Amino acid sequence: GTEAEDDEVLAGNLGKIRNYLELLDTYSLHHFLIWKGKTLDTTPEFESYQRKYQPGWPGIRAVIDRLEQILSRYAVPLAIVDGGAVASLASCALDSLATNDVVACIENIDQVRPLLAMPGQAKPEGTKRQKRRWGAVKIQAMARMVIAKHKYLTAIRWRRAATKIQCQARRMAALLIVQAKLAVQRSKDSEVWDGLADVLKANWARAKANAKSNAKVLAMSKAGPGPDLGMEGVEMDMAQLSTVGAGRLEVHLPSLSIDEELRLGLPHYPTDQNLSILGRLCGLVDRNIAHMVVVVPRELPQDVSEYWIKLLELAGVEDAAARLTLLVPERGGDYPTHLPLASLLLYSPIAMRRLTHICGRYKCAYVVPAVCGWQEKLLAVRINTPLLAPAPAAAQLYMSHSGAKRTFDAARVNVAIGAHDIYDQEDLIIALTKLIASNLDIDDWLLKTDGDFNGECAACLHCSKLKSVQDLRNERAELVHLHDGDKSIWHSPDVQLLARAKLLKDLQDNLATSLSLGGSDLLPDWLSFLRRFLRTGGVVEAEPPAACLLGRAAAHLLVEPDGEVQVQSTQTLLVDDHRRCVGALYPQTLVPDAALRSAAESIGNELYNRGELDRRPYLIPMQSLCNPYAIPM
Image (cartoon, rainbow, N blue to C red; front, side, top):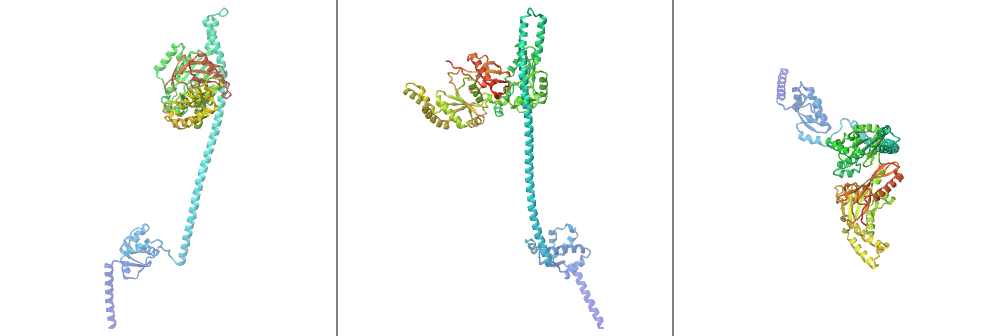
C-alpha cells in the first residue's frame, strides 16, 4: 500500500511539473543570460527556449555563439538576450549578418553599448599564452606595416624622382637631337644660300651683258639697216633680242617682315604691305624682264587686276597680261592678319609649288623683297631662287638708325647732330646732357628706337619745357657779352661741365614730362617707350628748327652684286605731324639732285666695301637711312 501511494504522489508531481513546463513554454519571454561570455544553458527559461525552437536550433545556436564571441571579446559581464529576436535573426543568412544586427538582440543594450564602444576594451580570446602570442603577432604586424609603409612611400618617392629625372633626360636628349638637326639644316640652308648668291652674281653679269646687247639691237632697229647689214640681219638681231630677254624672271615679295610687336601695333599692316605693288609692276617697262611674279596677300578683284594691266599698257608695256602673274597664298585667310606675307607664302604649299615651278623655267630668276628677314631667306632656300638682298643679319643691322649713322659717318656723309648705339637709361640722359649743353639753340631732340618702322617708335624732347635750358641760354648770353662777343667761350671745358651738371639734374627729374610720343598706340606712355628703347637700342638726333626746314628727301639705291651702285630715284617725302611718312613726290626739288645722288652713291660704295656684307646684293630704301635737310644758306 505504501508503494502505491508513493507512485500516485510521484505521478501527481510529474503532472504538475509537466503543466508548469507547458505553461512556461507558452507564456515565457524566452530571455536568457550570457554571463562573462558564457550562456547559462541550465536555467528553466533557456531549456524552455530550446524546447520551443528545437526545429531551427542549429541556426539559433550559431547566433548565440556569435554573441558569446562578441561579449567575451569586449569583456561584457552580463547580457540579457531576447530569444525571439535571436530566432528571427537565425532565419537569415548567417554569413551576411553584421555585428550591429547581432548586438541588437541584447535586451539590456543600454548598459552593454558603452562597453562595446570603449577603445581598447576588446581583448583577445584564448589562454594567457595565446593572448601573449596574439599580442606579439599584433605588435609585429604593426611594425611590419610601418616598415612596409615607409618602404612603399620611399619607393614611390624614388620612382617619382626617377620618372622626373628620366623625363628631364629624355627632354634634354630630344632637345639636343632637335638642336643638332636644326644646326645641320641651318648649315645646309647656309650652304644653299651662299651658292644662290654666287649663282645670282654670275647670272647678274650675264643679264647685264644681255641688256647691253638688247639695247644695241634696239638702237640698230630704230636707226634702220646699215650699209653692211641688211634687213635679214636686223630680223636676226630682233629674234636674238627676244631669246636673250626670255631668261630673266623677277619675283616681287612686298612683305614687311618687321618685329612682331610693331606688326601687332600697326592698324593697317596688310594695307602697308600692298602699297608698293603698283610701283613694282612698273618694272615691266624694262624689256629685259621676261616675266614678273608679284605675291599678293589676298585675291584681287578682276576689275582691279584689269585696271593695273591697262595702266601698264598705257605706260608702253608690251604683253603686260602675259608677262605678269599675281600669286596668292591659298592659306592666307587661315592665319592672323599680322603675319608677314613671306610667312603666309611659306605656309601655303600649293603656292610654293607653283612658284618653284615658275622659277625653274628661267635661268636668271631672283626674288626682290621689301624687307629681308629670316622668312625671306628661308623662302629663297625653299624655292632655290636667290634673293636680291643681303643676309638678314646685315639687313637688320643697316636698317637700324644706329647702323645707318655708322655707315653715314664712314661714307663721310653729313648727318644730324646726335648720338647712337644707346642701350642704357643713364647713357641716354648723359648723351642728352652733352648734346643740349653744346647746342642750346636746338629746341627739339628726336629719340628713335633702332627697330623703328616709319616713325612709329619715336619721341621728341622739347627743350622749352626744361627750365634749366632757358637759364643756360641767359647765362650764355651774359658770358658772351662779358667776353666781347666770343661765342667759343661757351664751349670751354669748365663752362660745359657746369652747364651739364645743371642739365643732368633737370633731365633726371623732368625727362618724362618734357617728351611727346609719336602718337602711336604701340607706345602710349613714357615707360613703354623707354622699355623698347633700352631693349632695341636707339639714337638721339637734333631736329632742325621749323623755319629752316624745307622738307625731307630720299634716294632709292641699288647696289648690284658686282659692286656697281645705281641711284634709281630721288623723292620728296611727305610726313605728318608726328614725322611719319605718308607719301612721296617725284621728282624731288628740295636739294640739288646731283648732290643727293652723290651722297647716296658714297653710302652704296661704303656698304659694298664692308666685309661683313659678304659682297651680296641688296636693296637699300634710303628714306629709312638718309633724311637730308635742305636749309637755305
